[in-house]
Structures are given as C-alpha cells and as structure tokens.
Length: 245
Image (cartoon, rainbow, N blue to C red; front, side, top):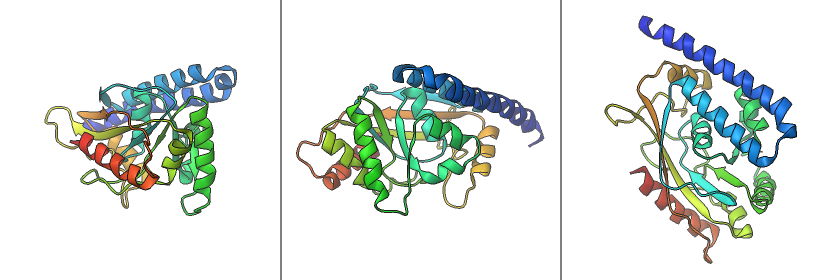
C-alpha cells in the first residue's frame, strides 16, 4: 500500500483540478454555449477526468448520434464518465446523485435528468422530459436495470423509460460496459459501486487501481416496430447481454 500512496495523491490532485475546471465551465461558459458546444465540453471533461483516474477507454462499434436513446448495463458511478467520453448523452439518473459532493453538481450541471425512484409517478415526468430531449435531436442515455450490479449477470430491464422512445419513434442503441485488467483481460472490480459499497470507498478503490481499462461495446440500432415497451425491453436486454460477451 505504501507504494500506492504517491499514485493516490497524484490522481486525487488531478481529479480535483478537473472537477473545479468542470464547475467553472458549467457556471461560466455553459450559458453562452450552443448544445453542440456543451456536448463537446462534456466529452472533453470526461476524457480528462478518466485520464486523471488512470482509466483507459476502449470502444468498439459505431456511435450513432441523436436523436437516439442509449441503453446500457450499469456497474459504477464511473459509467457516466465512460459513456460521455465515447459520446456525450443526456443521462437519466437517480435523484440521490444530487447529494454527492462535486459529482452531483457536475452531473446535474451537465444536464442529467433526475428521477425519484420511490415515486412511481415521477417516471411519467422524466419520460416527458426525455421525449422533449429526443424530439430536440438529443442523445439520451438510461440504465434500465435501475441499479448497479457486480457485472456477473445482467439484471432485468425496467421498461418504463423506453416509453420516451416509443412515443417519439426514435431508435435505441444498446451499449455494454465492462471494467477489466489491461494485461489479463480479467474483470476489474475497483470501480464497482454495488451493495454496501460507499461512494467514498469506490472512489478510493478507483484512484488506487492500476491496469484499469473501461471497455465499451456498441450494438446495432433497434426501432420499436410495433412492439410494446415490455417486449422491447426484453429484446434490448438480450442485445446488451450479447454485447457483454
């Protein structure tokens, strides 16, 4: 552990620097930027923050621009950074994210839609805002598992947020994430944020990690084609599971 402290200090300082830079951009530059310029800033910031954490991103597949709904498995708080580094999206996330120090402010400032998961009616409000974003040509991203997992198995998909793609008739692109050791290809557990793991513990584990690669696989577009949202969710679940390998 002693040899890892210099790495921890170096990465922490750089991550804090980019966090402060991100806050400055959101509060001072975002109001004057066009949506495309904001997306470029989000992508650049995500790439730099991942570099500060020592995370290398490998992406396979074709990025499809908006209007599109992106659905992915969910492993960590790091997932949003990884996906934004590949292609910026407007995310839907749990409302608790707002309370996270720095991360919450940055996430909300970047345009994330927050959902009160314990309030069933709140899903209708979020679907409405998702539909507005999709109609405006945005890329919107959701984690239909509804929570993080340990990556061993894909949890069932909740279908309610797919309603936004149904009513706007936009395509959905399945994405799959995994974290692995660069040298061995084996799963890397450092970024996992599941069960009783606290955000602080997951952050520390990621900052101390070595040889960490975030792998992103992008699948083929799917359209509703008359399916109801539940059957579509099942088909997308199979697609994401297949991308996970």
